[in-house]
Length: 90
Image (cartoon, rainbow, N blue to C red; front, side):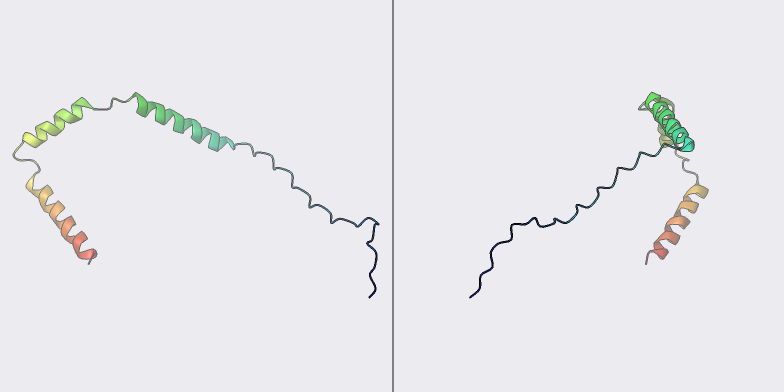
């Protein structure tokens, strides 16, 4: 049986894969920056609105107390919408 001695010469190691460089963060296009600014303005406007709009609450109470509301033609239109919608879901 022939046993070969261990090789002590250096064994080449495989090359490490190059780590890709991080891509630079793209600059925000002006239209996106404008949209973001508009979005922030809209959010701020919403924050400044009262949680309860008293005039709409009063309007709702008045309509609820009115025996003629909703008018018959509106009820007929709603009924038609409901019937048509129900027939589509079957």
